[in-house]
Length: 174
Image (cartoon, rainbow, N blue to C red):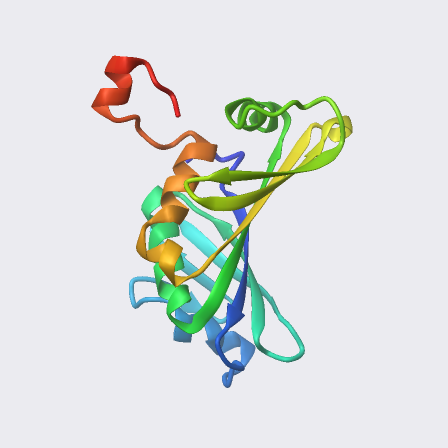
């Protein structure tokens, strides 16, 4: 994964209230593959940090720094078991922001919010041309996670997906 785009934020809505201390939440949510120490979890160099749990204890925020594409899929599938939904936020800057805007076929000339659909999921794209930044967010539930939508969207907007042999032959990019 490109180091400039691997910092993601997840906001997760629990299906009930967290009945454990903040330091125990990750160990309750993540699969046993992850090594959890308090508010941090690690898997083969990928790091997940629990930033906060809201006062009603039914929503929490994670910051991700992933080394492998499959770690995102493992993480999302582990967490969704106890959540109603997960909001995923990407922040791109500089050349990466321009590359993603070009891929999504949107202009990078004025500050605005755009709603797009990618793989059947509604994306909200916020453009900040003055600082050369782009934020993409979307929400997934169990249905999208079971179809591997998160890893497919991640691959498309981060440029890690491999085009199929047919699309290579036909010259299709999307």
